[in-house]
Length: 546
Image (cartoon, rainbow, N blue to C red; front, top):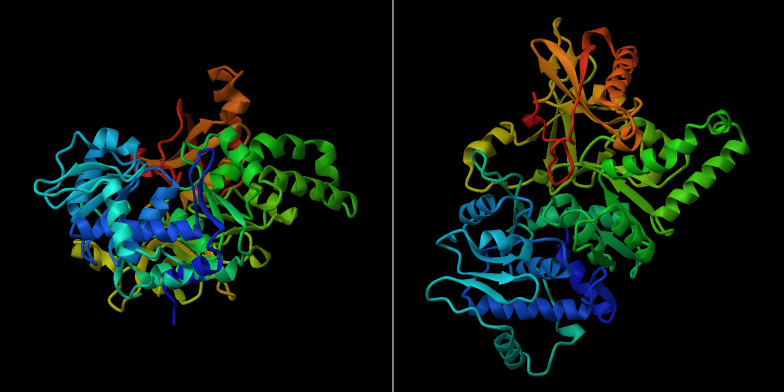
């Protein structure tokens, strides 16, 4: 039986009351586990004053920070429903989602509020409160949001003896709705993924068992907390394990990120493949491509020494105490993946989706198999629907992580499930005998060849991205032909003319077509003059390109 993650958090609070829990990196703002518990209870007083009831929706929209985590956990412990909204959405989209979700209250960061305050607030929204200092920003007619001083006074009256570790007992019904996470803005019918406490708690338990950690270890949170990957893997699982989390409260430029990693020395890095691929191209590839290194890479003793030096250097770049390097959200460049596995870097690539909060597949690094998304995680089942001769079909999943459905969107919910209750992932893949999940691409992105062959653009892009000076690429179909859109690697092409880049891409096209089947040949490469637009999890917005 899955234990609610709030029970794990309560236990950690009682044992690590004075230990640091949440810190805004490079800012004078930190909570110990005891201070976190007390601040959550202070916010409960605020909820009571606003007439918020268990089960009410409370929205969160702002950049990563300690107070984002405090508000999120306070909502959960109050038995409310958190509505986590990506701060990257437009003000119009955020306002629309506040209305669609029936949110009674909003915690909002200054970056979002700067634009959102010009919107007409939804009728059900009682109040908006600053994530910086809990100051009132908006109150509906007839509503009075108490100031910090008033909350302090009410809190002292409610707890005249103060709060001790033994007074803390946070819990909730795991089967009740706990979170609504929106996968997009207002385009079409909004998809608010409904997750109960059981889904979130099973995800947390998977993390604790797959990537065990000693209390007091440290972590840098760099992924958006409003995205399920960051929310579970950089907040809930590590915090319930007693980890001290540092939040990058500003956009993590390479210099800020590298300094934070050096200062914090995290045990775990959770990221998307794009980050390590950039590091590989800028830092490792110039060295590894040298003739002497390539010649001795697989030679006993000498090769082992070279691999050890590369591993040590890369590990030091991530702070020097790295135990787990977890990637998700997209496939990794196979050359980069092979290099990391050659040097025995603690790599594991997981597979998931928001609708599973997010984990479907994963493995500890020592059991990770190349080119897979791991095996089905605890309490989850995976099967392939209507596989072809190669065993490839749509990946279907069932288990405790699976969502309850989409909020107020019965049509989308019905379309997401089979008649016998399996969730359709929309991903194409296969399983091997050991249940490793091989992802071939998205059902919607697959092209059908002239003779009925299935063409997976992601597989072509993997090979193209390994060609010289290719930064990122996208395969599109035009009039029955495949065309590659390429944004060059500017670190390699900044001194080249456009004509020289074009000539290089012609050579890349020839090399590419020798690496792929004849039915998936690419007819042309078009050079893009700016990077592809991306989602918050750094995936290319394919629908924008034709």
